[in-house]
Image (tube, rainbow, N blue to C red; front, side):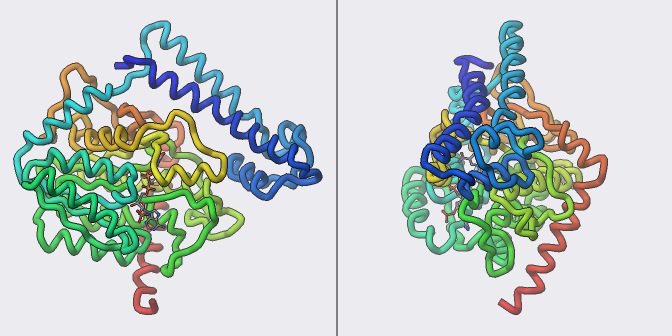
Length: 425
Ligand SMILES: NC(=O)c1ccc[n+]([C@@H]2O[C@H](COP(=O)([O-])OP(=O)(O)OC[C@H]3O[C@@H](n4cnc5c(N)ncnc54)[C@H](OP(=O)(O)O)[C@@H]3O)[C@@H](O)[C@H]2O)c1
């Protein structure tokens, strides 16, 4: 239940932060003596937000509100204020935003220890003091005589190994195996899946949390993919596809994707991979990765009806990944700690609240906690507070027009191209 006004406060601040952030950039630009043209960064930023081309910006007022200009700084304020008004009405009628209280999450996580021993879990993207690593820590400290696999690229392996050493001490019954692989590369996913498949006959939990915002621009991997998209979409989905036999062999299989569930948006359907430099931006790469992720996970969930799939938007979390946003003046307010995000991540990965109906078998739903809805495509899109999100306004149209199938064909084509290039590399 919405107990401490946290959800409402976070929502209001997040909505209203858009204007101050933009104001900050415009005033920086126009008080720093740049006249006649905004900095490339502001123009790029406008392009990203409006998803349109913006001509050179000559004055703050032109930048803000000129009719016909592709971008207006005041654009997000009205919808945000309307949303805040709706929330207030809901608040007054006591039909207010629900959230899973942190205490409830903590209590549920202690029950992970009561699950039958022998759980098998795989984490990719769980390094660097990020949300995944914290989720791994919160899961591993309770996991009952389990086998956990976690992946780090070579440059992060030593730091990750130090975290694992301390986890092994805190829970000596659980085996934790480090696989060294770079998840930005398609070929490395085969290596990860093979390492798990050689030892295990099932996989209960798969947590994928790799990814980053490519503020510095698109710098393709040697396989020719944008790493900000391969870490967030092409590699995790390839892992899911290859892991399906192991997941289907588990009694209550669960996938937790830490990315942006519920934040799906309009894509450039004629350039899903954003190959054309005019189409690529860090923002578009994030939108495409998140939207393709939901559509493809839904497609896989439909074909594997016992599989519970949670696509989570953790909201702003104070991780090294988010710290990069500082450099660009984009730091969001009201960030959660990495520890709280990991606590909630472990809950989402283990609570039967997010099980396919009739196929529970992990941690029982805490008393008093209501259910969550699935998306029209059959997965749980979950917000920072653990509640389901409805984004059918975007997703239903995509499904009706068969865009989910187009996305999947595109994805398989990209994978096939990477595989064909393997021998050349
Ligand atoms: N933090 C937030 O506020 C927030 C909010 C919404 C969504 N998200 C999403 O949630 C996920 C986890 O976020 P986080 O902040 O916890 O991220 P993070 O810790 O900065 O990084 C997540 C993982 O991605 C790997 N990675 C990053 N860049 C890579 C590259 N170029 N090649 C290969 N691997 C790379 C990292 O490996 P290394 O340790 O080797 O770098 C790490 O394992 C991300 O997809 C992020 O976009 C985050």
